[in-house]
Length: 208
Ligand code: B1M
Image (cartoon, rainbow, N blue to C red; front, side):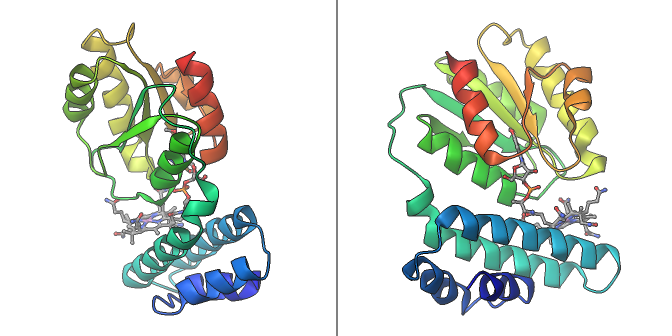
């Protein structure tokens, strides 16, 4: 079952993925396992891209396929905790178009009890600042970056939030494949988490 999910994502079976994921769900495979399989498969896709075995279009179709697959299990992953911890502003930094990880963070944070305001991808630092100012009840901001070349934009974003004097209002969480706890500390972020599940736990901690 999980092999079929992995192979459908890897080969970009856009039309078949929903059925394949649904079959796995119906067979009793836990949604978390299905998600972990899809995440691991994107790692395989990335490795193939790095070895020039596939190119951007294939990587994009794999990503779209994963998104469709996630939509099937989304209701099983997200609980309805209500927005008891207030708002969580989230975005992928300027110059960066990767959003699957960010979207998973949004999903988990929402199910942990936040109202998520998703600014999308390629978000300039000023847009984060404006959104925080427009939402004075927001206590946590999540900033995602997937490229080593956009880590600098993450630094700029954290600096802009601090320069705008918003640190007493919000805590800043960062994450994404190239981000390390050391880098997070270096740029002055309040927290780093490696995945969506731990991001949700940390967000709850920071909001209290
Ligand atoms: Co891109 N890409 N990509 N790509 N892509 C990577 C990131 C890469 C590692 C592939 C590789 O070479 N092995 C490489 C970056 C290398 C580097 O920076 N050193 C790369 C490259 C080079 C590029 C382009 C430059 C390629 C080109 O055009 N020549 C280009 C850049 C475009 C841009 O952003 N400006 C590009 C484009 C794309 C697509 C558009 C085709 C597509 C993205 C589609 C989309 O997201 N809508 C794509 C994809 C799919 C990937 C890979 C294959 C998969 C990413 C993914 O979705 N993973 C990726 C390879 C890889 O990651 N191994 C790759 C699954 C997802 C669940 O994981 O996003 O890591 P991830 O999220 C994780 C954690 O990181 C964490 O939680 C999630 C898991 O629970 N997390 C957070 C993420 N954000 C968080 C925030 C938090 C906390 C945790 O707190 C706020």
